[in-house]
Image 1: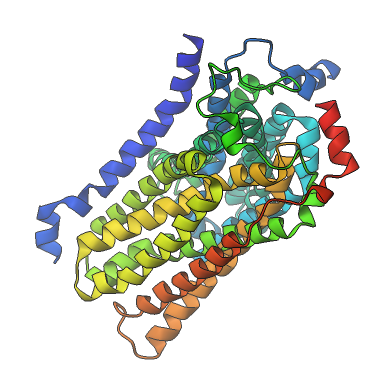
Image 2: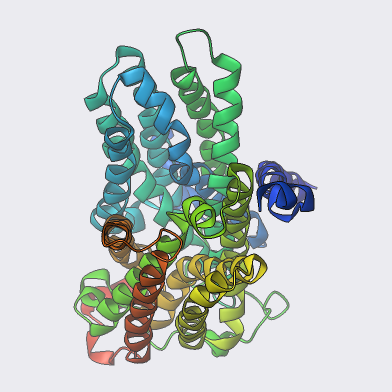
Length: 38
Length: 449
């Protein structure tokens, strides 16, 4: 239980950062953006 | 006061019998996650430029000084870090790094550029160096059976620091922004407060193994003999005099220089070569950050199975081949191929950072691995300053020579191949350290441990 809590405390901000980066990289894979920019 | 000092001493952090070693990586990650903010400093470039009334290029000096101080402090205080233990070092690192952030805010408030450079660059930079090496050295001692994976976890946290630092700063600045105020000073103070909590949390939970501790058979993931260091333990001063140390210095310097070639100009490169929008270019940098993060953990974990020398050969050989293919992707306007190639390259750049402490442990033992790592980090400082300068000046000279912007990067890619070739040769020359380098100091340390 203690180990889980400790890991969660550090993994939650990391997961938030990764999710923000994934969100940011979404236009790279978006066909709509492709069509309007290429 | 003496009670606090006792609490911070190495002796106070020795783990009790039966301690779960998996509680140590979160301590390392929490510190690295905070100091990794240095990668996200560019988010403050424009706001600080506006607040201080100076060009962005002068604000960027703070970042550059911080990276130089990171290397210098890690090199100078490595022995002290080994003596004092991780808790005291993490607390000092927290005071310096977060204090530096708070003083930067004061510099912004008072509109004093010199204070910003001194606070973030010098004070924060020293905190960075201390915070970088202390947890890595501790993890290497806790995971002698999987040092690559263990250091990969910590250094992945450093990569994650950029992913957190950038959006956090943006959110806070938009929260505090008022007419005539970018909100940068308030954001810096808030970040300093949050990061202090996290770094002190890391310092609170960190533990060092008891002298002579080795994981029992049930805890071991791979046989200890597979990655057991050849050397019994070499002191930092002796390690500094071996050719192996300098070969690894070149390996790290070339690996970082080659990665920075793409990372430093990722968004511009994507726009110049493929003519994409700002959003797509930002997406490209976001993807590279994730590749950098994942590469740190994945590649360094792989190195526990393959051995460090082989994995670095892959970084350099495969990296060189992929760089050589980038002009082909550019000529064919194949964006997917370009993204795939650069993603793999950046994952190996991150892997190179994360695998180096385990490589040092293999060669020099874990006796003073933190201090040795500290001195090796000067290679990063050198590469972080010289790499972008070389890349930018080469690109600018090609454009000045009349080469179209989309083609001007090809020379840069060839330069990166050259860096990787040098790193490849240096890595091939690495041999086990001769026993004559095991000094009295090391023997004493071994007996003490």
